[in-house]
Amino acid sequence: MSKTSEKNLLPLDIVRFRDESKAVIDFIADYYKNIEKYPVQSRVEPGYLSSVLPDSAPYSPDSLDEVLNDVSESILPGLTHWQSPSFFAYYQASSSTAGFLGEMLCSAFNVVGFTWFSSPAATELESIVLDWMGKMLRLPSSFLFSGTGGGVIHGTTCEAVVCTLAAARDKALKELGGDWEKITKFVVYASDQTHFTFQKAAKLVGIPPSNFRFLQTSFATKFAMSPELLRSAIEDDIQSGLVPLYICATVGTTACGAVDPIAELGQVANEYKLWLHIDAAHAGSACICPEFRHFLDGVELASSLSMNPHKWFLTNMDCCCLWLKEPHFLIDSLSYNPEYLENNPTKSNVVVDYKDWQVTLSRRFRALKLWIVIRRHGVENLMHHIRSDVELAKQFEALITEDERFEIVVPRRIVLVFFRLKPKHGLDGNELNRKLLDAINSSGRAFLTQGVVAGIYAIRCVVGATLTEERHMKDLWSLILEKARFILHQCSQ
Ligand SMILES: *Cc1c(COP(=O)(O)O)cnc(C)c1O
Image (tube, rainbow, N blue to C red):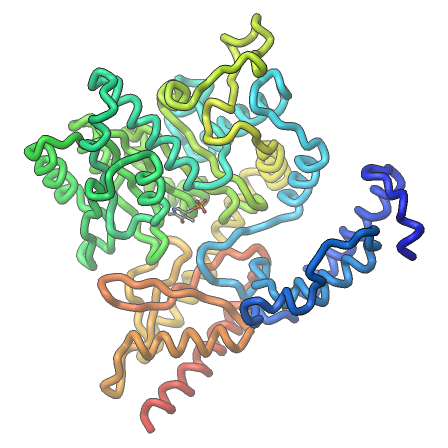
């Protein structure tokens, strides 16, 4: 296609839309078909892209062919292939056909459902799908719209933590007579394994960093938060004239997959009247299976709970579900009502306006995506999806355990296998495993990341990419053995 033929390109021409969208779908299907051929972790050097792309925008339109060609030639090499079946790093962002279709529809309608009035279906579907999801997790009715609570879909956990912290802060400030100076007295609690998102959020809502308490964890509790330490920290802070405010508990920590004891932490929270938030970003997905639901036992004692369907629930980025027992605290904290956003006045008392449940005003119709993922799989297949990944993780863990050169550093709770090569030849174990991980990742055949607990550097293998099958786990194990042999040999020289 020549440039001149596109001179009068209409931004939304139906014929062109149909043709070009189909071409892009074909491009995507080929990408998935060939995904195993790419090195999983990108190998480019910083700044690589500016050396291959022009340094200013085209004045006349480029054709779709030219653009897709550049995506293949210039963009793909700079991607780390998160959808590769050999991606075992971080926590995955799992995608699916249903998730993709949901994103397409969301993008197609492109509605901005900040108030009920601005697109009633966007708001109502979100409330319905949160109740569906909440019931799948067997949350008590105090978290559901059909009960006395409710929920919202945010983009990420970070936003959910910021918003619940703001709600807890404003609730406490009100109880203290609205004196904002008191903000310097608030104390927040988490374990030393809690995601850094929590510190960022606490700082954003004005909690002084000197009032962050990171309770120490250890091998003795498999790196779970200790309710005793929590209680004594709270007591100490009260003694010092401070005001304990908020606890962030985690189901499935990021480094090693630890699970905090929700029921016991909940008792402490209720006794001292603190806000307890449960961050189940990754592991929350597993809790739809009855055999993993016990990780959430005690959830009825919490004030809020969040999990990310975009991690392990086949829902393409982004999607974070947040449920609250008393959503009005969130609304009290975050709502402003300018005249230009007035709902139809006759309805404003009975509807949800999600702008009051989040940081931003504008919001995507994410509920559509989660709704389609749930409907197209059914709870049955979603449970199967979780269980088959857990099975693969179990088998992988068994391989590690049976090989005396390796050890499991923290026992697997769900799908995170946290392992390392045992220190040998008087070598520093951390250095040895850093080398091993580097050798594995530079091969391009798999991508894993590391975690450090109690000063021990270990390798994290998370099973959860949508396309991962048994054969990829076998390939991973051969790769690890090959690189371990090489490194051990090198070190024994
Ligand atoms: C991934 C993760 C987060 C951060 O999630 P975002 O949605 O990227 O903000 C927080 N906590 C835990 C336990 C996680 O696994």
